[in-house]
Amino acid sequence: MSNQGSSASHSVAFRVMRLCRPSFNVDPPLRIDPDDLFFGEDYFDDPSAPSSADLITPDSDPSYRDRFLLHHFSDSMGLSGLLVLPQSFGAIYLGETFCSYISINNSSNFEVREVIIKAEIQTERQRILLLDTSKSPVDTIRAGGRYDFIVEHDVKELGPHTLVCTALYNDGDGERKYLPQFFKFIVANPLSVRTKVRVVKETTFLEACIENHTKSNLFMDQVDFEPAQHYSALILRGDGHHAEKDSPTSETFKPPILIRSGGGIYNYLYQLKSSLDDSAQTKVEGSNVLGKLQITWRTNLGEPGRLQTQQILGTPTTKKEVELQVVEVPSIINLQIPFTLKLNLTNLTEKKLGPFEVSVSQNVLFGENVVMINGLQSMVLSQIEALGSTNFHLNLIATKPGIQRITGITVFDTREMKSYDPLPDLEIFVDLD
Image 1 (cartoon, helix red, strand yellow):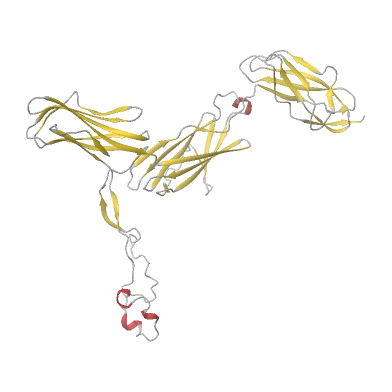
Image 2 (image 1 turned 90 degrees about the vertical axis):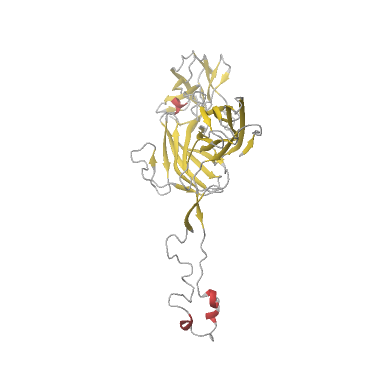
């Protein structure tokens, strides 16, 4: 943390220390066999050497097999039982709680009076007040004395931050003085979250890859997906124990997941299902919003952190304006004899559409159509009210026997001058009789 602001002409000055938990003192043990110190590793490989039984102690192992065995469970940890206080200001990460111990010291030979202290956090977007003693100033700070206080701030923005400490006071001569001091620090991103969305039939799968960018191991307490309205979420695990969100038995005693420092990753997989059918899905504004991730973690000594992602988007839904469907097909269709196909046209918008023309377009892939309209080559339909529908009959005739396709039935809006997607191909059997 860099300090800006001169206090040379002032009786008081601020000192800022970061409050954070200590770390373990790790002292990795050097595991050797004591006999190595006296004889060397290859001494007993020499056949002319004296018997090892005459030279080694009963507790030693001439084969060196037990050299790296742990005689106590704490041996592998290298923990000395001591804690190390932070030696520097350290890194500050998004989602953590910044906690600072601030001391205003009176270095003069006289006391200062009526001290009004303010502490603020300033970012590129906003200024947040942490402490203000305007309504109850500090009466006096004696010569050589100090006044201490602690401030906390939940870090919610990346980039440069400035801790602004100011003091308004009366010095020994009764002169009112103003001291500003600025302490700058940078907030970094502890995690990166990469997502992939795949749609398989009616089910959406969301994969979230979380990478640890800090210098500390992170223990993930919670990585929950909060689905958007009309969606339900199920977290999938490799062990087959899948958990529904908000389930009564939702992982009450689950162990935290470790993501190691310096680039460790962990993948989560969620299965999402929509409670809406396809037609209703197109009417929901912003229906490609799937939801967001809520992530909470702790460091080695339990310091908490929390992040929330932005809304995660799925495959954009194409909003249909109209939908053309087959209602009824005759059970028997004879060659060169007209038949009637019953269709339904639905208006999926909130406004009136039409009038429409229904026609059979030429199929480029298969050449001339085998099934054509019998009579006028287009049929006119009147306007359809918002979210309304209408049934109509189309007179067709088949020109070839066997299994044939009805293709190219298209709807054209004569007012908007636009065509809609044609009816999917429909297979029929044409009888010779």
